[in-house]
Amino acid sequence: MATATRTSAVYLHPHDNICVAARSLDAGDRIEVDGRPLALLAAVRLGHKIAVRPIAEGEPVKKYGQTIGFATRPIEPGEWVHCHNVGLDQFERDYAICRDVPPPPTPITDRTFQGYRRPGGGAGTRNYVAVISTVNCSASVARYVAQRFDRSALAPYPNIDGVVAFTHHGGCGMEFAGPMHEMLNRVMGGIARHPNIGAYLLIGLGCEQGAMGYLLESQRLVQIDGTGAATGPAVFSIQDQGGTVKTVEAAARKLAELLPRANDVRREPIPASEIILGTECGGSDGNSGITANPAVGVASDLLVACGGTSILAETSEIFGAEHLLTRRARSPEVAQKLIERIGWWQWYAGLYGGELDNNPSVGNKEGGLTTIAEKSLGAVAKAGSTALMEVYQYAEPVRAKGLVVMDTPGFDPPSVTGMVAGGANVIVFTTGRGSCFGCKPVPSIKIVSNTPTYERLRDDMDLNAGTVLEGSTVEEVGREIFEEILAVASGQQTKSEQHGIGDEEFTPWLIGPIL
Image 1: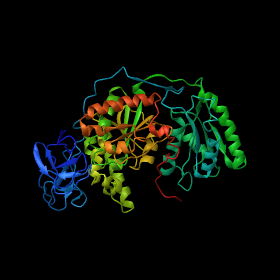
Image 2: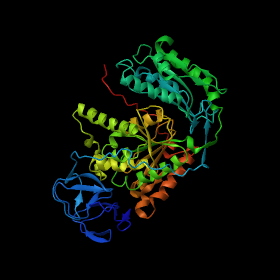
Image 3: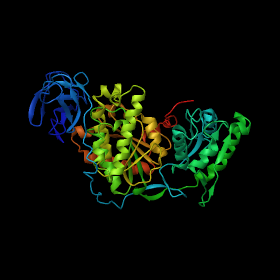
Image 4: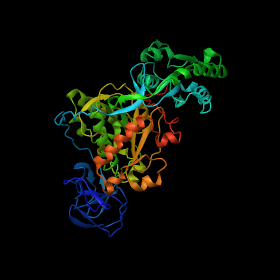
């Protein structure tokens, strides 16, 4: 990465015809790009693009050495480059399947974290107790049960981080065993089995399409006691119990019985290879792909070198950059899985008259992102540089080691919910505009792309990757993120945990008609 003056603009690749403002600049300001002086023709805000040479109408606009769109009119050097003069047409991308598969990274064998070793073999970074609502009709009852166990009630159980009600808006009005049903079952099963859950119970209504019996059977749900013995989970039906009050009382009594066992855990050294890292970006800006996301990519590479797993999600924000991943796929079959998912998303958006290029939000565009290709090229930087080992369906259990993709939407709550249900035990969440996010039962480390946002939202942001614009290297910040992952996995609280954020962000992605 070659930079202009440290705090003025960033020039990313010799093939680029734009640079990115590293601070807000005024019309007439002079900057230096790759050794050449350039005068700005208009004011340009932090994270927005500046033309560094003439761009003809119809010519590709290049960032990261890749096409992010096409000029819709001639653009002069020093001109602001954004939605008013750039659009994204369809263009061919060379998937070059498996052409650039990298060798495995040099192994790192000596890194550990202090986690919870579960009887079933999983590695927890937190210790929550879950009250899982299997249908929206039992959501209020699940919340009433969880509310019985506030911090004062949990005082005798210092090793329990909290009791969380996992509620949602689905569970009925769907095709039995159809896509929506199976997706929801994977989410609920993934939460119940999650190594950050020390104990759980399930609450349903009794007549819903999302039948309790099918959930238990399809997800093979059991409780594992301290001796490693499997028992059936605690299950409650409001109709069978005799109504709301009786169900709350019965479930609260059962939960009180589970608390001593859930509390009977201690942190111990566990290899970093057992971290499953979920990576997410939300409220992105034009600097997210320059600072925070590539720094997460460095941390991802370090974790993979430790034998761990890093999940890249948000398929609708891989669109336009998928060719960078197919080239690194370990096999043609893995590459084709990703290509199929991209095609599915194009079909799915088209059903409703939508286009994936509508994805950059109002806030993204305010932050300097112009097209989905630009957003995606920055987003996939979180994937680092290792081989793509597998592609998973939403909330599917993640078993592979190394870099994997999970098919999720770009909207942060359902995307993170899917990764957590798939087994992620730490989340890193990058943001440029400032997303204040948490998702119990997994800690979310928030990493901001620029210093002004970090200073403004210091109470909510964990790390500042904006120092890359001020002289730090991406590698230095990436190593800082990696160390933060190990510290948080060992119990260090994130800012969102300090604020108690995360109860409302559990949002299963549900596709299909509501019948």
